Image (cartoon, rainbow over all chains, first blue to last red; front, side, top):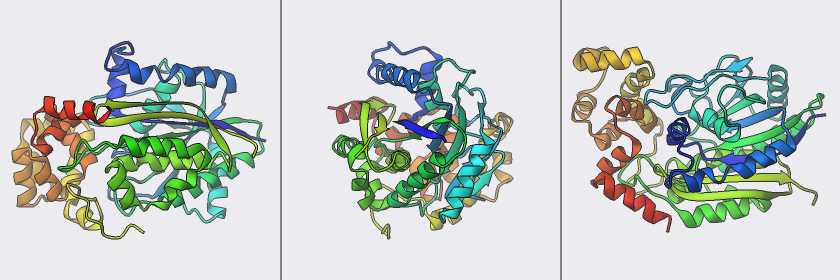
Length: 281
Length: 114
């Protein structure tokens, strides 16, 4: 049976893509950010995942407002990255795992998550940058992938509670899969930031810190808030913490953090990183 | 639940904004293509004429004014592609929207980490 080896949650700020391409890892601005990742590399080398299930939000590469799914699950043989219009390097396609994708889709729909299924799906920086951060060295991704896109473009967005439950259902789906696979769950985005409006530049260190403290042991702490309340607390793009909640949901009831990093600012954003593992009660 | 809520300096991109901004966002979405970005740069008026923009949207584009573009229904993720044509990054956009210099805006972000 498939087994979830843990979860990684990380910011996916586009500027990271440029910094990687320019090899700025030791640059004073970037070092406190990139220094968070070697422990993740060591953890990945230890748990050796075969597949990554990736909760992320599209920013107008694959989906436009003509058709905007709330939850979309990739079921493609591979996922291509493409030009997003503002000049970050396009990364190599990531291989899919269609059989696992369809198992996840079947299980989700049987649990009343009526997802959109995508046999063709471009993935944007919210997918590719975490891949590049976790597995540096473009072009040879060592995992197959199942992308799950959550709408954060157009309101109404799914609630924090709903995204957490989606993650729980994905966790059950993976653990009921008949193949012997090691699966890492990834949630990308956040933490607090706001790009638009007079409130642009909003960052909330106190809330982010509490969110990261609560996420492993008390993930439902954040699900008490409405989407609007979360945006007030974390900014219009800080709502990407929904991906973190979904990833955490997949771990089951009890989990603990094995690594974390937090740094302000990268671009306009408070950059966060966590590695979590399930544990017995 | 997430009923109407007034967050200062913030426009939630909801159904009303999605309706209002559809043409503007559709044009900005087209800027994922390098060919389209070049066509826009070559003849901005001709490119805009292909989309059914409102006068308010056309004027906000002409003035490169982010707050006006948002008021006209623009969504930040699609507007970012327009900003890309202009060579502006998210800190340029932040500075413009808050009426600060870029340096002051960046300094404020650094201060938020302390």
